[in-house]
Every structure is written in C-alpha cells, then in structure tokens.
Image: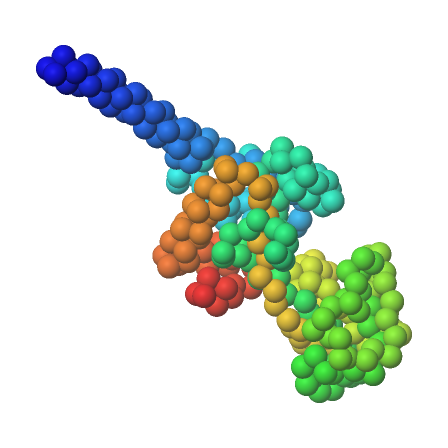
Length: 264
C-alpha cells in the first residue's frame, strides 16, 4: 500500500512539473503576442496635413502619441489607397492603414482617428440663405471624380438639378466662380487647405457650410497582433483626449476637433 502512494506521489510531482512548464510556456506566448509588440506597420497615401513623407502630419502624430509611449515603434510606407487596403485586408503584410469609415467587415478600434467632414462651397450672391442640407435641393453641384456624393444616403432625399465630376479642385472653384454650378462639395479639410493656399475671399465672395461629419478610423489587419494594438489604441486615445493633448495636436494642424467623437 505504501509503495502505491509513493508511485502516485511521484506521478503527481511529475504532473505538477509538467503543468508548471505548460503554464509558463503559455505566459511567454501571451507576452510575445501582446506586451512584447515592437512595432506597428502602417501603409497610407500621402495626404497634406495628415501624412507627410517626413513623418509629420495629424494622423502620424496621433499614432505616434498613442503607441510610442508603449514602446511600440511606428513604421510607415506610402502606397496608393487601393494598394494600402489590399496590403492590410488581404495580405496582412502591414498592421493598419489610415483611415476610413468603418463597417461590419472592418477590424477597427472603438474610437475614431478623426472626424471627416463633407462641406459645400457656394457664392454668397448666388445662395443667400443656408437652410442645411435641404438647400441643395433643386440646385446643381460638382465634386471630385470618384467621390460619388450622389450615392450618399444622407442626401438621398435631396433632388439635385444636376451634378458633375471634376479632376482638380481648381476646376470646381472656377465653375462656382462663373456661376455654372451652385455648389462645390468636398471634404472640409481639402476645401480649407485650398482656401489657405490660394487666399480665397471668404469674407465677401464665398461661404463654406458643413453638410455632415463621419468618424474615420484606423483599419487593422485581422490578426492577433492587431487585437492587442487596438486595445492599446482605445486606452491611449482616451488618455490623450482627457489630458488635452489630442486637442493640441488637432489645433497644431488647423484641423477641426470634435470632442464628441471621443466622449461616447
């Protein structure tokens, strides 16, 4: 009987040793997959004030402030938009791209990177009163090719008299100036950049009105690494928001800051 207990005891000791080894191994794996992330690889087009080749810009500055304090190096590569989407969503050779409205097919953080606004430009002597998006009804509009604002659900009830697409913002401003179209619709950030660069008269001649705003997100590859990166993002972006640092970054780049996007 005694020998039976000795054998059982030895087996138990072996079992405990094996269990400890397994647990330690799992801990190491968990650490490597989460806490030991060394970098985040980002692919993106180059956008003025948002993603510059020298690593500056609103998006890059936010991402660095999120991840670098966690010991995660931010690496970026410039590629066309469709290529960025393909690399992240299909090949998973990069961790994230910047940025887009998310849907159920996308892996994205809870909190956005920024809020992208659509806006309308018009001559004050042509449109004398702005009554919100309904003002577009019965009017003509022009926008950048491929932006497809006519398919936007928020203006589904707006019956435009006619619309057209152009290839350069300069064309759109010229058409509005000559009265050939009533509105030029574009992203607010692009409109404001054009106004600053070209010293457009916004006092006497033109007016800009925001049509809507939509949260825009970092979109991640569907990997275990991304899940941890998203956890870090959701925590750090709120820390930046509450400390006031996030607002400072937006102000630095003269881009509208909408606090409600990070209060939900």
